[in-house]
Length: 410
Image 1 (cartoon, one colour):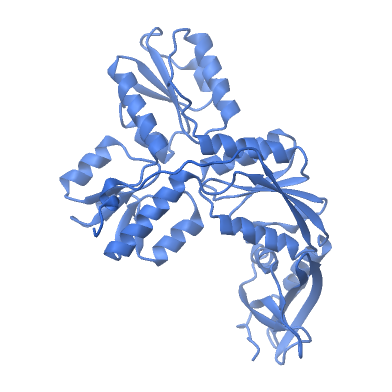
Image 2 (cartoon, helix red, strand yellow; image 1 turned 180 degrees about the horizontal axis):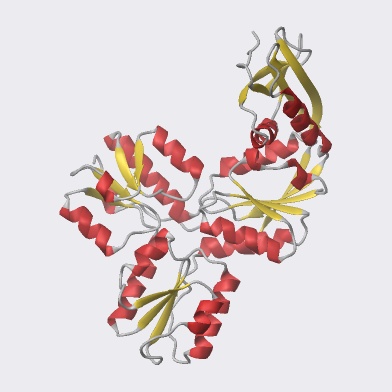
C-alpha cells in the first residue's frame, strides 16, 4: 500500500517497489532528502512504486551501484504539489552528479578509545540502573551519539543545577573543573566520571606546573569544555592562548617561570606554531613530558593529510562542535583540497560532487563508524564506488571502565 505524504510534504523513497520484482534500495535517499530540506521542503521517507502509485505524482530512476541496482525517487500527493518543483530540482541535482567514484577511506577514523569508553560508561549505567541518569554536557561532541543515548534514558544537562539532589550524574569525556566536582559532592550526587584519561593527564600537569610556581599557558580554544575544565585546575595561574598572535603578545609575571599545556584536540602543526612563538619569547619555557595532543587526534590528522593529496574533495563526518573534526577539515583545506564537515549523508551537497571523481572520507574521533558506512553507501547509490582504505597507523589503545563500573553486580 502506497504511503501518501501529507499536503505540502514530499516522499523520499527508501526503496523502489518493482511490480513482480525485487525492491530496489535507495541508499542515496539521505542526500536527496538533505537537498530537499535545504530548499525548505518538508519530507517523509518510505517506499515508492517504480511505475508510480495511485494518488501520487512521482518520479523515480534506477542507477547502478557497486552492489547492484540503486534508485532515487520522490513523490507528492495529488492536489497539493507545493513542494513538487523543488522535489524535481533536487532529484535533478542528484542525478547530475551521479557517476562512478573512488572513495579514499582514511584510517584511523571514527571512535577513539576515550570516546568508546565514555559512551560505554553511559550505556552501562543505563543498563544497570535504568533511566533517567544525568549527563553534564554532551558525553562526546556528536549529535547522533547524544540522540541515541537520550532515547535510551540519558538526560543531558548544561549544569549540575539541573540535576536532582542525590541523582546519578556522568561527567563527559571532556572533563570538569574541581569546582564542578566540589558542587557534586556538596549536593550528594552519585558521580560516574567519564573523563578521557588523556584529558585527566593534562589536568594533573596543570596542577603540577602551577604548584611549582609557573604561569601556565594553556593553548586551546576558550569556551571549549576541555579548556574550561583544565583552566579550572589553577585559574589564577593559567592563561588561555588561542593562537600564535595571542602567543606573541601574552604577558606573564615572571618570564623565567612559564609552562605550557595544550588542548588534546588541536591541529598538531598549528599548536606547534604557537609553542614555537612562546619558546622564542620565553627561552626557559617548560612543557609536558609527552605531547598533550592525543594520539587519536594526531593519527586522524595524519590520515586525512595522506588522502587529501589525492582527493578532489574531502568529507569529514562529525558534528560542528567537535574540535578534532573541525581541525581535520581545516587540515585538508591547507592541502588545497576542498573539504566539508558533515553530520551524516544528508549534509552532502550535490554541488560538492560535481567535479569529484575521488572523494576522501574520514570521521572525527566522536563520530560513530556506521555514519561513515552510510556515506559510502550513499555515494555508491549515486553511480557506484570503489573504496580504497589508506591506513597510516593501527590503533590498539583501550581504556578500562571506572572502578565503580568494574565491580560486579553494581
